[in-house]
Amino acid sequence: MSRSEAVSEVPAKAARVRCFTDELPLLAGVAAVLGGAVLLMAGDNFALNILATTFLMAGLATAWNVIGGFGGQFSLCHGVFFAEGAYLTANGVVHLGLSPWLSLAPAAVLGAVTALAISWPAFRLRGPFFAIATMTFSEVAYVLANYFDSVTGGAQGIRVPYHAGWLNMIFPGRIAYAWIMLGFLCCCLAASLLLLRSRLGYYLQAVRDNEAAAQASGIDVLRTKLLGFAISGGLTAIGGSVFMMYVRVVDPPTLLTLSDVGVRFALIALIGGVGTGYGPLLGALLVVPLEAWLRASVGAYVPGANLIVLGAVLVLAALFFRQGLAGALDRLLARRPGRRGAAAA
Amino acid sequence: MSTLLSLRGVSKRFGGLLAVNGVSMDVAPGELVSIIGPNGAGKTTLFNLLTGQLTPSTGTIALRGAEINRLPPQARARLGFGRTFQIAQTLTTLTALENAMIGGFMHHRDLRGAAARAMAALELVGLQDRAGVKGSLLTLSERRRLEVARALALEPDIVLLDEVMAGLNPTEIGHMVHLVQTLNDGGLTFLVIEHNLKVVRQFSNRVLVLHRGAMLAHGTADEVLSNPAVVEAYVGKSRQ
Ligand SMILES: Nc1ncnc2c1ncn2[C@@H]1O[C@H](COP(=O)(O)OP(=O)(O)OP(=O)(O)O)[C@@H](O)[C@H]1O
Ligand SMILES: [Mg+2]
Image (cartoon, each protein chain N blue to C red):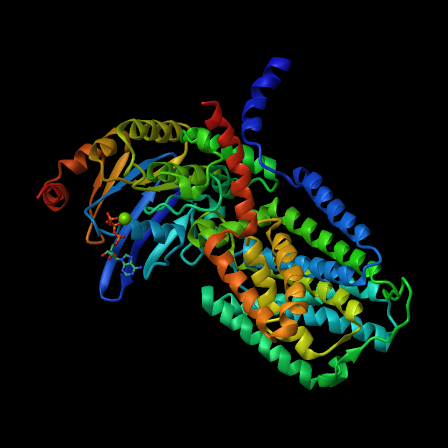
């Protein structure tokens, strides 16, 4: 019996693919390192704010990457789902006295449903035309947010009053927000890795690489894109909810300025490594602290200089890290054993 | 004899061009039918009509007696069609194994099941040692064989091969012919577009000759290849 088992095990072993469980050790390690950074910075509010923002942006870029990276659908309307999460949570607190924690799940549902509604017509378009269509949705949402002031507070914005407490997701110290954002990031990473190691994740990548091959393999292209977009939109809306409680006051420009929100999620993912599990996190770890530092140093003397430097970083990344930081890291790690082999020979 | 696939007066018009013109034929389960014809005869277009990349302008296509004219490609794949493309449609960012897994997922939702199915398909086409290589790094010959692996991983009832031997070396052609014959002996139905007449003679039950979209001849390989009209239109022309 042991003999036949050994024989039947050969193809199974050869066919080994990375499953979600294989991803868990690295995910736990990454969470531990980021958590360690929070502990190290305890007491330094400036650093904690940068960490919280980095984690939030990393989570949002990871969420964008689900459809923008795995699915290859370059959405620029993720600010819409982000804004929905923020407004839903704010209205829950202000008008219904609802704990923000209770609005996370409804925010995800709202984000997912809106994503379906937006992308169903937009997926008739491809490539840059799809991107432009989604951009239009984002601009329309901006106008609507200004107009429906009973929900959004209009141009004045909507404010959540300060009542500190766990249940209200409002804290006197900044460290709690860093933990919450880290929690959000870990949820996004886990969801993204789970997807990457599932049938839907592979279907999304197949659709991105070659629609004809995907269809001939029995994949419903539209359905696959819609599901990917819904998951991405749902996660993004949760990010909007926690962002709302982090800043406690938001207006339409904060939530829906294309260059600050929708485009930014995409850029961070692109710099870090689009379509990879950890690329968006790497991108956020580089871009967000760099931005904060530039704003504080260069931007203080020459207004706008920080943007010029950031633009240069983007260009350099596009030129030299075609597969983002994750791709560069991958190549570096792959080269090491090769070097050893060359040295031995 | 029951019919697996039946075509009745199937035509496809592209503007002023009748690319496929009134093709009628029946394919029984377990048959291996070759489709030959000069360049531009409409062979690939006929495949596209069968697997749903195109819909016929007139005529009907039926699988196991049910009309499938308007079904999209993914639905036809689920009904049992597996196909390769004349220009290999490789998923370039995925590995060879993952490419084949895309087919394996059809009947195996879980990763391990799909991977095992995919690995078995890669072994059939001799790509097991290239399982971990990215699609973009595969050679033309490997990409063609990967097309076959992805189609076989679907566990199809009927397989459509569009010039899979092109770009393969003689050893690889030998392997591919042997694989197709073995699977066909096991009961799998094949429609094969093939320019290599030696191969066509070797493994076909029947041969269909297309010329300017229409069926020029139809029968056993020997009958068809000795038909003067075929020699005139196809063999003669290609030798000029
Ligand atoms: N989508 C299309 N639109 C317009 N014309 C097309 C289209 N697809 C094919 N054709 C034309 O239809 C005719 C048949 O093409 P098809 O690709 O089916 O030929 P084929 O027999 O496969 O040829 P080959 O041996 O070169 O692969 C050609 O004249 C081709 O230019
Ligand atoms: Mg052809």
